[in-house]
Length: 393
Ligand SMILES: [Fe+2]
View (cartoon, rainbow, N blue to C red):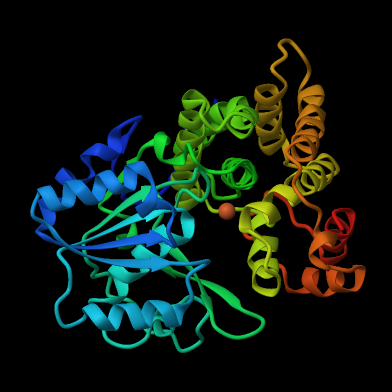
């Protein structure tokens, strides 16, 4: 066995995980003060039983709160407008209860309210970017979907207005929330298509972090544990939303995917997602889900044909063994099982192909030209990237 390699691991939030943990949200928030900004989705959370309970607990605790509701993926101008309302008198704490977009909006507000200027000044990809000082308001995340893992990451994905929309991250080591309250019950009402897409986002993040060129022993352990739970429970969570054991496994997988990606990076599937997500209105989880099988197959076939690939192929084999649940088979068997099982899963979960969103063969060529492969375990050239897109039209 090789010696443990060097790595850097960023700070993660205090985590309260488990069924019923959201009941502690108000008592956790009062640690920071008595003025709260609550960020939610359009209506689902504040109308849900748990949401109403949270509002009741806030009133009972004498907490003054404002509510901002976010619809769709957050746009920088929305963050600017919302932040300007609170600059004079910032809240003591921001609590975001919702899906990945809501948590990202809350995270962005916690970072933008205390600093001058516009959100876009601090965004990655801005050639004249101002370095963010890292100061932010206290922030608590309560995810209601199991997918992005944003409750534990240090970046918020935002869209800049305009067409094509351009997605960029607001990122700083300090931006990870202070507290993540991960209550699987909050996802119980999440519909099957969103459960499937966000679950596949989590699985993609886990597999990409696991096989990333910048993975460490520590991120491997977390990613593997998440894959074990996620592969085992994604079908059950989609088939029966009320299955709390499956919901817990998916919430766990998603949370670990966030920690793993923040510290190990991602691969070509997410490279595609940042480009496609800008041009087309396709949910992030659908892009990941629809491309995961094809990218994994392309990575494996390229790794098999090149040298020095054994560690990564071993990882794909370990993941294949988890997903096929068979013992005493060869690495090759497990590696091919991984590809087959992922493709089967994506079909069974009814993840749409890219053609459904109007993407054509010509578009595939242009999109491939713009795609970067992040920390993918092997290089994929533009022709190979185009072939992956074409195979999923
Ligand atoms: Fe993702």
